[in-house]
Image 1: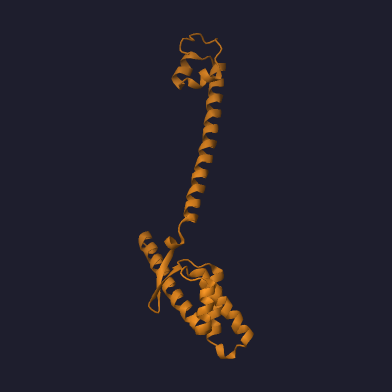
Image 2: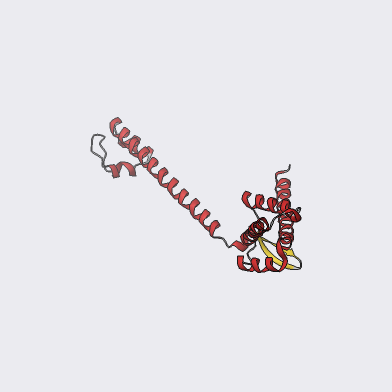
Length: 180
């Protein structure tokens, strides 16, 4: 390549791309230098696109790893009547709204008809089976048969109270980290 000592010789794209800036200035005429520059820019754009694709792939792999993380790693242990349960640490808006609805109902249980009672009991069972990893829906139904909606609500209140305390600790740690 460096043996091409005349500026009027033809250079292949591969030969041009192999040249450094200093070599291009030394060996190439103006037209060849512009071609070298375009090739280098094109190569850089292509490499940049490849980097963006690779970074995106790595980001997706990271998210997939996080999503696949064990549910137990994303929970907190709560003590409910002396029994340790694993509950999800973050509760989505729908679950919080369901809890509030159930909590309001539990305050006026004597005014609720049997149909509503069953509906709310089922809602409590679904909510508990969503947030507690240790027991399934049939197990919560069995608990409900023994303790009723009031028992389900007592468990939910204990779980929510402890989860919210844990969330508040995390928020406080974040605030102190930020210096707020």
